[in-house]
Image (spheres, rainbow, N blue to C red):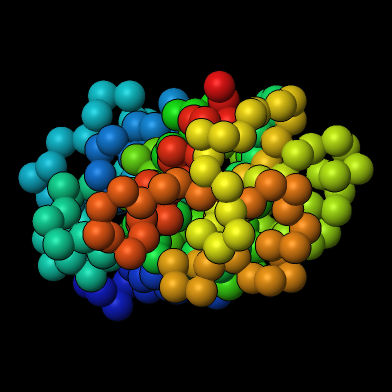
Length: 245
């Protein structure tokens, strides 16, 4: 059992709390039984499972991948307020795009809960890929992973220039939708047609002008009450399912 936070392995695990170290090490940290099971059964390489003393790991875990730590050490590793006593180090990998019909384009979303929810919804709606533009929160942020409920293990997600991506998609005959409030048409008045990509923008500033001008259709979810706007992940979910109809 590892009992010291000065242990080299513990130091390396803690480094994964920061994006720059995750990118350098090509690994990320997940917590909880559900997420670890999703990663494992989705074919991702779970390099190490960290188990707090007194917690029983699932039967399907290989014993040689399990590292037992005491409660004090696990507290240094965890990033959740009520940890389940189990975490894992997962190697990054690129998922193939299984279909090529619906794509979500994310422009500078900064709230990890919003991004995680959109990943989960895109997965549920059968989208084939998510492209994260400049300024978007790291997909391997622990709050993004938890909000996705494991959907990051099911759908292709990549970081790329949205300008270049949209230019390419247009060459491939995609229709580009953008979610915005100004100069937009009610989403109920838009017909879904063939391959399409949806752009969603920053919580405060919306989609950048450079990206917005590339859209073929600017659509909005109408506000019937007194709310100024919808949460971006809610609007994205409504529009993603509309695109499927």
